[in-house]
Image (cartoon, rainbow, N blue to C red; front, side, top):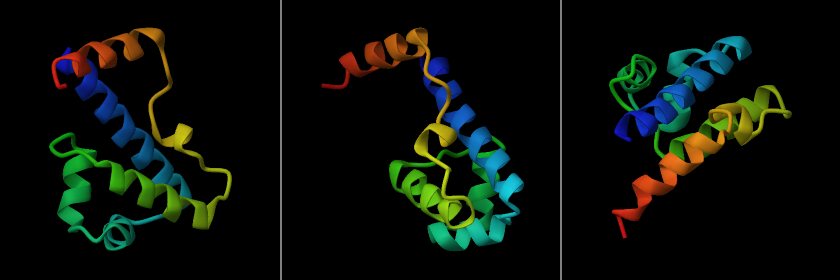
Amino acid sequence: MASIVMSFEKRTAENIKKLRKKLGISVDELSEYLDVEGSFIRSVECGNAKYNLRHIYLVKDLFNKYDKTIAFENLLPKRSDGLIRNLQRRGKGTK
């Protein structure tokens, strides 16, 4: 189950990296906007760290300065029933 969540986080990071490059946003620009070190962005893009919810909101805000059509759905992995079920199961032990 942890691999499902890791896959979700990895796919989110991959989507953000792909859009960042498409929009011509540098690692330095993104890190400055998120108020993090550039090494953090590189670590996320290599799978050694992960974005939190604050980061996701700020990434969307920055990307919208370049392309108003970018939505959260563009940043997050595509929804699948299997993914949702696995994420729900993971949450049952955390209450």
